[in-house]
Image (cartoon, rainbow, N blue to C red; front, side, top):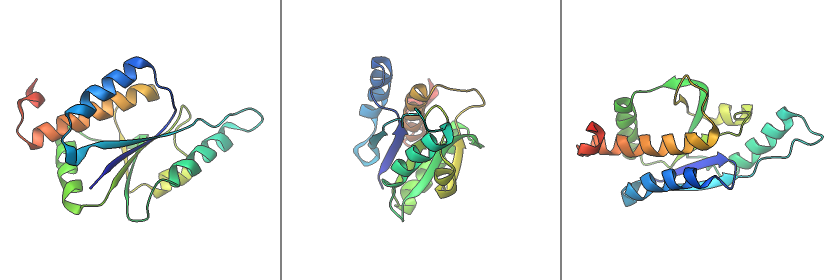
Length: 155
């Protein structure tokens, strides 16, 4: 199983890269996350909807037919960290690659949401998309530590 993060936005601020990298380096080799950044589509003359659809098409090009897709979406299901640990273990058991999708400032396209096998909301709060990357990586690491009975998750 591979974890792939497909995220709209490039050139993250240094604090995002530092936070993301801190948890990424802690992950075991079998759970390293491959990050694929999708450039923001220029809005210019096009509408927000068209921009979001263009970004969605760029995301979908990186997803294989057999991949399991998890869309991070404000209307998705919320999970506790313990539930995420169980989900992570289940993902490892099924063996399919898991694609985690983070949209741009306007969210994910309808095509991405339709392709998703699961919609997950990290919080009822509105989080800036760069921060979502850090929170996601920390929670994946924390879920792994729970499954390994590592003391980090008790901190």
